[in-house]
Amino acid sequence: MGVERNMKVSINQWRLIVPVVLVVVLAIFPIIGIPLAWLLYLFLFFVYMAMANMWNLLAGYTGLTFLGPAALVGLAGYTLVIVTWNDLPFYLGIIGGGVVAAVFAALMAIPTFRMRGIYFAIGTLVVPEVLRNVFYVWKPIPGDFIGGGAGYMIKGIEGLSLTEFYWLALTIGIVSIIVMRVILRSKLGLGLAAIRDSDRAAASSGVDVFRSKLYAFVIAAFVMGAAGAICFVYQGYIAPVGAFNIRWLMTCLLATVIGGIGTEEGPIVGTIIVVFLHFLLARYGELSLLIQGVILVVIMLLMPGGIVGLIRRKTRDYRSLLQLATRR
Amino acid sequence: MNMEVLAGLSRPIIMGVLLGGLYALIALGLSMVFGVMKLINVAHGDLMIFSAYFAYALMTAWGIDPILSLTMGIPLWFGLGFAIQKYVMSRAFGISMEAPLIIAFGISLILQSLAQIIWSPYSRGLTAPYALGGISLGITTVPRTYLLSFIAALVVMLVLREFLRRSYLGKAIVAASQDKRGAELVGINTGRVYAFAFAIAMATTAIAGVFFGLTFPFTPTSGVGFLVIAFGVIIIGGLGSMLGTFIGGIVLGLTQTLSGHFLGAAWQMLFVYLIVFVVLAVRPQGIFGR
Image 1: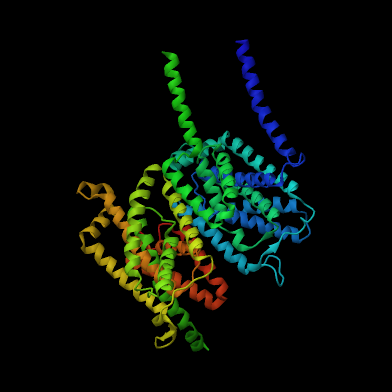
Image 2 (image 1 turned 180 degrees about the vertical axis):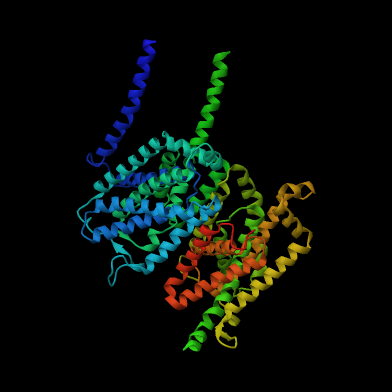
């Protein structure tokens, strides 16, 4: 008995120690001077992972096939512009971007949660299209050669280097993982899973469907917005075409589907592959997008559970084989 | 004063109605796939744009007239639609609710990047000698392309309607869309019927692409916007009614030209998307829907 308890404690300790060590190692990467290219890969990995994690929370755990991440990312980017052009520090812009995205998501929830399934998907696909047109016409900062289709530079980031951007990205990546873990192990997470499987059954067992979905949507929007703003801090420039681009959705979708939709590790594994592909195929330009599209279709057809789903199935087979063998 | 305003309005109204015909034509394929297979083909807009590019390629390479090139385009798109449904979508339905959606999204990406690789991201357009300039309609002159698209939309819709009402295959498609099991019980091979329905939808999409290309310039990424418009048309018009689809198209066409007339061209698409969004939020089953 005593030995067993000791073992359990040590496993629990390991579960805490491993992530902490991993985070520390990742955090000191820029200080120990790893190549800049590596920092850039990791920067994109963390930002995309944060978005993919949140998309997975919506599509994989809440049953909201949200096709409008570009709306949140773009709005957060423009919030960053407004904040930095008013001579406020850029980190306020990142937080503000998250807040604006969250508020917008809450407003968007009122009309779009009335739509179900495919209607919700298309309804949310329209939103970035509308916003792109709005930002072609409306200039949040008036001026002659700025705004509209010409876009804005991000101010107040002159002294920053990739190291700072990297730490920002690392932070949002960790936040997204923690948010997923906490939500999925809470009462909210159980309610969400019930809603995804059947919202009527969930409602009749006392889950407040609208409120649960709203919480998930607003939290996801905050993280997506902040991650998007960090991306624009790095880019240093924003215009309607890039801000409300369908590629934001594609990144979320690709990472989640490759890794395994509706699994906690899925988006993390998927993002590694997406970033890898991103750089592997970078010099082929448009061919890269083509290959990503083909991968999306093939993975969905041949292994709908993604990589994590496949591994889980294999290990389950292996375990049951092992059980059969050992039990005799 | 009032007369002047009315005279000024006659042009945007007529343009809007004609444009509505084109929008209805674009929506036809989406409506058919949605009605029969309950699938929103998010690659619809890109398949339409790709048809315009196909006609563009034939036009620039051999000087083939865009409308004449449909003799090749229609069979090609018919076959493409048949293959997509038979080999890809039919399997996707068995996987999960969102699988067909994600796969269609993947197809949309593939088409967009293919168009960008082959024809570059720059704006292209289709031209034909008879489609240039304007034509007088009594009170006002409209571009000939608008009138051509409107006529094409009417013809395609009438042909499709008669096909669905009179031919065996047409009746089988209607039966499968109303009650899949019932259709199977009376000996209809729904898998095959679905493939034919997708193929016919793609054939109308090929036609829509060419007339779209004659009317507007297009880029590889134009498709998404027209997916939204086509979806708006069938939401406003409801499923399974040609007249509804036509009305849906005209509502959006008028929205575009009138908001362009009153507020300037920069606002017109914004209002079209807003109308689609509002209708979705208020009546997801459609205004004329059952």
